[in-house]
Image 1 (spheres, rainbow, N blue to C red):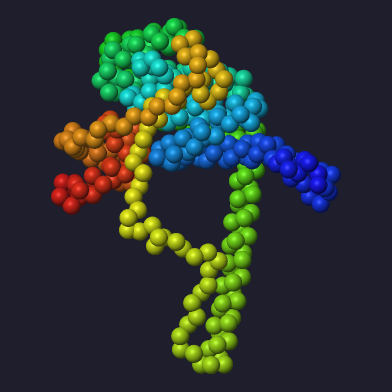
Image 2 (image 1 turned 90 degrees about the vertical axis):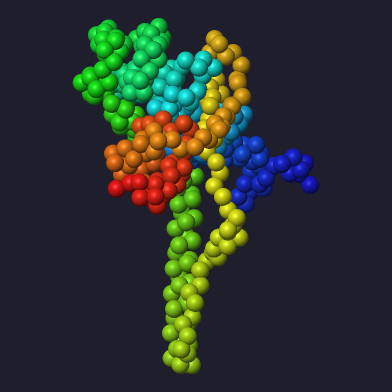
Length: 360
């Protein structure tokens, strides 16, 4: 017996001389999984699905720690994911990605964005995102009535990033006046930031396809659907034959390829509570080193104690539904501070208000 077959080696195809080690196969499969999660994360970002985004980033974070992922492309993708996570949580100032609690999500995003300059083909797009991150870091603080935080953010950018001097002067004037609706801020909105980042993501995916596993899964689903359709036709033909030959009054139940298993999970099924990633340090998602964090820190999660709904929170919810429409819970979460509540919680509270006839 070939001793190599006892060491985790497996023959490839029909040629026994072609030996492929399991670690090699595992490395390729892990790369495909990372690519699939990367594409999924980009899709959730585009569709503004915060809960799905957070679930995917948690899994991707675990996969990215694999020792087999050493390629340049993998490092780029993990860095882009870290950047998207910070932008996605940009309006949630209580979410931390750095050891320094004064560094808010968009500030941390700017830190990563500066390392991605070589990845961005369009220089103008890179500059636009840089300015948008700066402006929105200040604007969000002003929206939440935190002038001191806006000043701190502006000082942080002056010390850590390069940007046009005129932009800095304008922002200092806006901060001093607390002009939340200044035309300059209105021209660099958060929605524009999301759209510009999405342009970058689309361009990156076009240049760096990451859909090997996605294509394989699509073929599997298509094959399953074809088999199911064929069985449906056979089932219908058999049913017609039975009707003609036996004059049966009952119809034959349509056969499906896979039986649904939903009954096994009801009625005791429950949704997993929202756990927000508190720190997703740059060190963890790539090999970028920080002076304050020389070693990779463990990812920490925090869960706030849920308090009762206040009149102010109900007011935020009503305003959010009026602005975005019922069901747009993820967008509403970005506009107001709901003290750690999730989209599901907003939906449940909205139902309570509707039953109490407190909404028009």
